[in-house]
Length: 391
Image 1 (tube, one colour):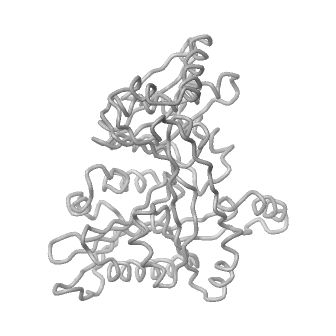
Image 2 (cartoon, rainbow, N blue to C red; image 1 turned 30 degrees about the horizontal axis):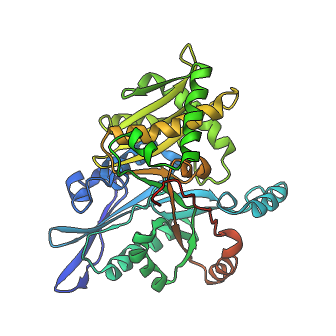
């Protein structure tokens, strides 16, 4: 196990100190979570531990805790893995690269240091305590990212999935040589409703009709909904159907492994739940894994059995059930991820921008990457829908 104290940096009247480890278990949960909102489950010590213990993409890690005195003022996880850059690019670039891979199999496949975890759930893992000046904190974090990248032979450093609010802090990376590009936007649904009926009553009739059509379709096909808190017996099936979704995914940075499902279930036994849509006999056609905080719920993972004709109907039903589940848990926000925008926006979800911050350690490659950013990382505008009558 590796644990180091980095040189101190003076900020205001008390020195900052950064502790760097390569195993999250070398940092206490209390220290790591001290400055986090309790709803911030995907930045929590438990979630980082799930990612590391499951060995997703065989990533290597550096975990950073910055303190002032005894107070935690910032945390960040860095991970290093091999990434196919074309999977983050637009369709035209991906077709061109696919045609060229016969001659160069490793084209655009490079080791990358991520300022974040090696999972793509539309969340960052850089957290700065409220009221802190981010500039000296980002300087320390960037220095460690540079050293980590050099030790792994990685040229590219990418801090990922910053929301517009988080960008107010992360934009400080631009003063350290990074540039900002759009990532896939996220979906989120505000839930100022007591239950699903109240939400339906607030909808415009056309969108309400679509939901009722999905419900009637499920009745006609004999499909049933189940909510499962202990899903150990289903892990093989859940992983298989997740793989089928990833085989069709237009954009992907990594794939989860089966161990991730097991570690997630174990670490978040009280917060993680599976919602399934099943045929008679118990065959799962579609499912969602939910992660529930007290006031914020997240639609984390989906699986679909595409080989069945009812699969897309089942998926629409399971997305609707994520809203029902969040309302039943008392959530006021449902995070819905970075896919299936049409299905989710018809339920009232709004689209929110996410950003990546990139820097290549080699000046020439950095200039080339920056000059090609509009091609490699195009903005993906999504037409909003006016689902609710008062919108």
